Image (cartoon, rainbow, N blue to C red; front, side, top):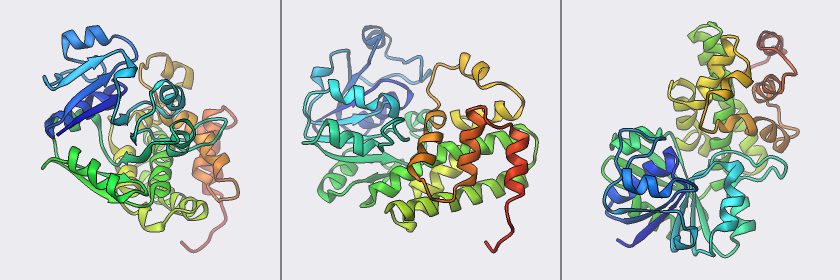
Length: 317
């Protein structure tokens, strides 16, 4: 195996470095800050209890990242990170969301900043701590170039980390963006004590929104039913380790957004994605995502949002 470079040493980047080493690769892990401390301690404060293997070399020098680069930074930081990166031949983007302002998806950002790179997304229902532990999981590598997809899968897959290919990167990215927004709604419903029936109904109707949006924007309906759609949605809407679900849960219990964010170190992607997703999908019927965007912006209360959703006209499913 040759060397793999990881851009970003947060929880997900660290977990992917561990997984890439487990798959037999030498790994360079770039940390935006604290590289020396991480190199010495071999354990990230963002992923406690998981030591970096000896095959992982930590650096703060982004110019050392060459070859196949896996970008594990938040969507809102992706453009700036890729602008610092030297020109590379292959990019695997792990960000999930939509860039505010430009309304670009991660691969669209990569195409603008790294136009010479062959790019794909790695996405699916994965919590970082479980990947780092080697627990069974599956994900999708989605991109137009099949040779590149197959190469990434062969280099990262292990018996406990099963990877599938997809030639619908648009659908895969939309699933990764929408699930964070819907998870905030699912958390709010749960935090407000509205019951499991309500959460199940919300997840199901959220999947319908995702399906409508994906088809309208040029993706494929079957992608929505796979790991990058339904799979990721189920995990994020039901797992207490989900940052988006837990934020929604706190909102449902009556906490303010400012107070929740004040005690968080990690990024909750659904906050920025909600209004960007609604804007990107202009003209598509998306009542749940619109309600989340309004709730986060302070334009409505949770009670008002629930009343509005329940008052929608009756129709066949």
